[in-house]
Length: 379
Length: 196
Image (cartoon, rainbow over all chains, first blue to last red; front, side):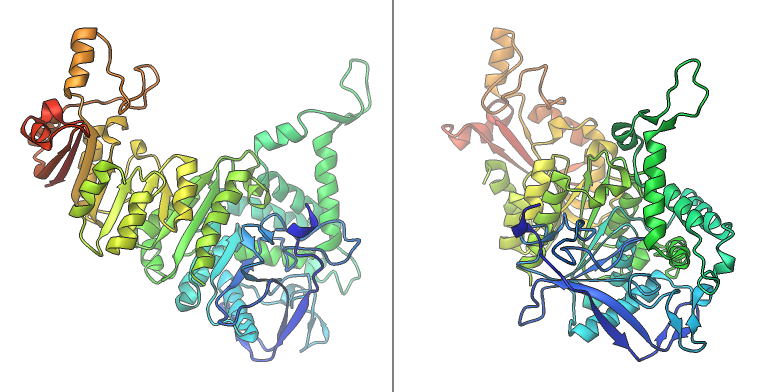
């Protein structure tokens, strides 16, 4: 990635909110903080702001680097930057760590002001709707009345759709990538296995591991390994690892165990993840994903739901994504068509599975860039 | 603008809703949006065209109409356009039915296989017609359902489809008189406005 295509070095900022936030679960958060990053400049008419919603394990660091010797850029660096689809020469891009997160925003590992100890498992359960409302508070804080676009992949796409219904007059374009109107039973099942992996770790202590000075690292790693498999396609794994061995041999007369490359890759991914992610946040985020059902409060009718939206939509899916398959995206598109909302849809041929939404796939970037140019022309 | 499109744009009411089946790069929908304030949606399967149509700021949906159009509600558009694509769809009859279910009116344009040049090539030379207008040979053509002006009108009668208007485009050197008087022989492109 050449230097001129990067937003360069970015510094996260923190917004503190003292007005209580009423949550869907009936409880409220009296005070909370949201950590966020911005890229590009807000124009004089404040019409070029774009909100990026992150996925399950994402955070506020979507683009650029935190320091000169930072090895890895933000998670969506392929799509955000000068000349990239979300062009920071045109847009003022905002990305935050969602409430309940573990990268600086108030979440289960923060101190509960009422007890002086970490919230842990007592942190209120959150819904996508709660995230959207907290994001609207951040928009107020930044002086943004209406987003030029709210954009997200996967769980981020669900937040974008929820935005279109909760604040129809504060969003002009809704970009929904590799998402769904709700999770399938298979998706719910994967999330349950991930939570069980964490909760059955003896170091979990019912979620109070911080007080016990432990981390349920094995459970969290296992949860991540399961998730990771579902983000890749069969072909992508075959291409990347095949049946290659990392050690040992399958020859006759070999009595020690052989290890496949894919095993060590998954273990590495798992241990990397458990080293920097909070287990209670992972449980909270997977539950929010499980509970998301766009049309639940609209008589289970996505068409009736989308009639509340006033924005234009771009929906993108990827051919080998089996976590949120093209069929799920077409359900979104068909509901939008039936609700007579302006919608554009592209199904991208990609071998990378669900993870494709993070990858620099030429046609994906072309479609995304062409649409964002339209968004920019309207600012 | 392509000749058939410049004919049919006159049939599209300002401010109406138009679904363009096989919208290509979106040049027609763009014209209708900019000149007629039309709220348009395009359907397309060609990747390059989809990106081009998005770049024009149009709403375009990647969908293969051979796999059905049932996701479009009844009478949800004023006009459904099928321009030079009838001959390339797998089930022309079903597409016509769907067009008139989805739209109040349909506009269909197709190359007339009854044109005298086609007849000449097939009748005298014994070859499937290939011309600048229909440049494919039989084994690589996307056009799998050719028909003539007469064939199409017979189908409309059989299916209780009412022809509101018909226009024909002849070869550029033709006097319009020829193609208007004997469309089945002199029209290279037939243009129909249909309803039920």
